Amino acid sequence: MASFAQLPDELRRLLESVATPFSSTATKFLEAIPNPEHHFARACEILITLTTVNGPGGIAGGSSNGTTGGSSGGNDWRPMEKNIGFRLNATFMLYWLYKEHDIHVNPFRSHFLETCEAEKGRYVNTGEKESAVERLRRARCKMLLAILGGEGSKLSDLSAKDFYTNFEHLRLGESADLRTFSDEDEFPPISAWARPEPHQQTHHHSRTGGTNGYPRQRTTGTPSPAPVRGQPVFAQNYPANFSSSSSSSPSLSSSANRNPPAAEETPTVPNAILAPPSTAEEEEDILKTAIENVHLRHLTPTERNIIRSNPSPAVNLYTIQDAETYQKTLDLNPETLYILTVELLTPSSAKRDILLTTILPRLNLELRSLDLINHLVYRPAINTPPLQNEYATATPLLTQEERTRLLHVFTSNCIRQLEHPYGDEIPVRSKGPDVGRKVKLLCMFLTGLLTREIVSVGEMYYELQDLYMGFTGFREARELWTNVTGGRGVGGLNGG
Image (cartoon, rainbow, N blue to C red):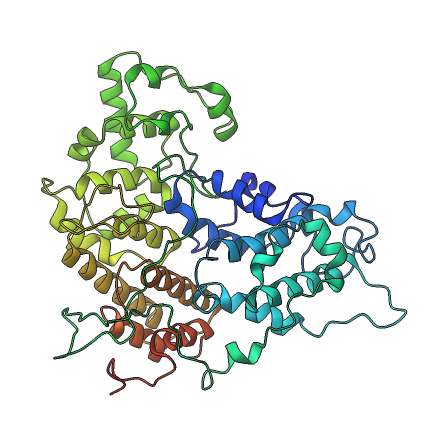
């Protein structure tokens, strides 16, 4: 399965608005994702859609000619309307999700810089006709310069159409100096994770007397709707999800399963036979069949609803075989596996230890794997005061020690996969595009953990150092290292 997915159509359409202010469109986008735990995955999908996929309606974002993209100067609005709305709103969305944090620790900063470096300096020669696509490129570059210059909030009340039409006359993006971001030697130390008093951290990697010189910052977290574990919105290649009515309650009764709202189910699963069982025996048979096939095929809506309603019986039937089978289940039925995993990690579960020590640390470096680990570690730790964020009310599953150890081993395994993409028999570090994307994804994952104070820089220092030393040729790895060390060289936390 691919590491990245495209943004689903229903979410992409929300970002195609041209008349609504950017902030209003961003708010509606977040409201369409009831589960805030999926913001990370959706942000990655926005990025991959922006960088690798043609514009909505088949309009190529990188083409400067053609029948759909050849209108001039914004006068012919309709042919480029969806493309303009999507690309400007999507760009603003990547800023909006992390607007509470310094731009230096925004995980999409590398994308902002690369785009600006490629597009800055595009000017229209006198008498030369400018295509709509070329104008959109310049408009998006202007927006990114404003964001990098700390003026992203000034864009909130503008609409995509307003910005596209008048961006040349807006006094925005004039203070952004790309050299401030791209020159590592002159990069100022980032205090985004600084506290007044450094906190002493100890773990299995720590040296004697090691102090976290760049501890974590208490932040409000990514803006999100109310912290409810509701229906997520999946990408195009994800399995169909259950109806929103089923996700509004913790468990579903048999009668609810027998009468699912057809208006909500039908668009997600066209022509599906949604008639559920009429007896408890049939429900039990379907539950057993679903568990037996959860790693072989996409489950039907009825099967998913029954598992969601009966997590304990489902876990009793579920057999943990190996990491490969678990990964297949994650690829096919991610939301169902999350329900099973939460149940498996309860303190009374007999399968808890094997999941923590053998299965979860060996997951592949894929988007769904990182999303699952995020779901687990963002919860409060057992017997530890929760952080004041959207996960504060979630039931704790792991102790602080278990959570930190899982992140250590999982991250080390991800780095090992990057170092040996073709297996240990061929110890060649690939520089291909897939490895590049995975490095970027892992850096975003680690940035999220540090920003949300799940772990400290000191606790993950050696993994961060390994990532930097092994992949210093990638901008994302260099920037992450610069952010957490202030530009110092490789060595101890105190620069040794």
